[in-house]
Length: 231
Image (cartoon, rainbow, N blue to C red):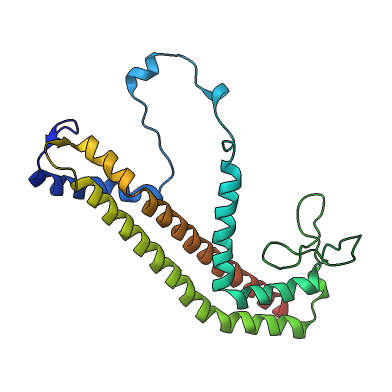
């Protein structure tokens, strides 16, 4: 059935399941643009010269704020993990000190800002760690992973629930119109109806991904500490 053909209420529910199934993958897949073949005949040059490489005015600050909110959720979910990291970095790194006040500079989350090299990497020296300190950090990370992995699983569950809510909202917006409405019209109404839920699902997916990456980083750190003890 063509997407331009109108649907009655009976056909809408069946068509909704197909459309929602396709759209539900959008939060998990990279953006792909389907160019109409007829449009490729309009020009022999690509639009790279007009390609936008930055956020529109006002968008950058909004995106930065949302990113900080996501990172704030991670830090509130894993405070003990970040505390261990702060203790470790306090031994191998040097904090940035305000030359005027003599106070250590803190980031937006209240953690010290660490000095960086011209290359952008942190100035750190892990030879400062004693075997006893390495063993202590390794034990704390190893014992903490069990609980951290459970918290990461909870973040994943919340992301899946948010995605399910988005799909439900999309389906509701798709089916709601009465009369003979085309699939394309129903899809656009569904997108508009579920826009807020879609962004919430994307936000929760980002939090879940950050939690997953944090666990992996801690596992790698634990392995490096273990290797250094047995070397």
